[in-house]
Amino acid sequence: QVTLRESGPALVKPTQTLTLTCTFSGFSLSTSGMCVSWIRQPPGKALEWLALIDWDDDKYYSTSLKTRLTISKDTSKNQVVLTMTNMDPVDTATYYCARISPERGLDYWGQGTLVTVSS
Amino acid sequence: SYELTQPPSVSVSPGQTARITCSADALPKQYAYWYQQKPGQAPVLVIYKDSERPSGIPERFSGSSSGTTVTLTISGVQAEDEADYYCQSADSSGFYRVFGGGTKLTVL
Image (cartoon, rainbow over all chains, first blue to last red; front, side, top):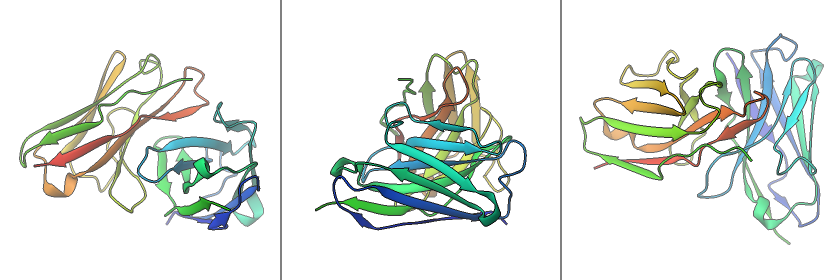
């Protein structure tokens, strides 16, 4: 049974760095073809893809946010971490992590975590 | 930046067929995926690789592809299908994912 769970602060101040952790079970990020991705969704708006990391530790970032994002993995802990620097109120959103399988794309999602950016 | 274009809204009566389109230049080269999202919930994969349906997804959901446009079809729409639907694909390199702007399906 595949599960993913996002964790991190619910509230951050402008200019601070956000660190989110995705803890997963039911699959290994060492398996060829497996990836974990981060996606966010501002309230009432569309999904926005942020980043992904694959089994081989290759990393890909949204071109519009790549200067602010870092994604990393700890395979032994089954965790993927996303950091986003210089947070702004427009970054207020629900942040999701999801598994990408070679066959089915983003096939399992976490429940999401709402991050509010406010002073 | 690469974009997927969806209509903002589609409305159908129960029992009718809903079609939601998604267009982009790289779609002939990259697979498309469709996600259903109900209020307050995480998205759920309903179609992968243009036209494949995951186990547990009703048969009334189907996908197709033609040139630069992919289509999600929901046959015999039910009230429970009212949701936002997002297409997702990758740019021509295959590395950078992108979502469409979402389509709100209203069941009249």
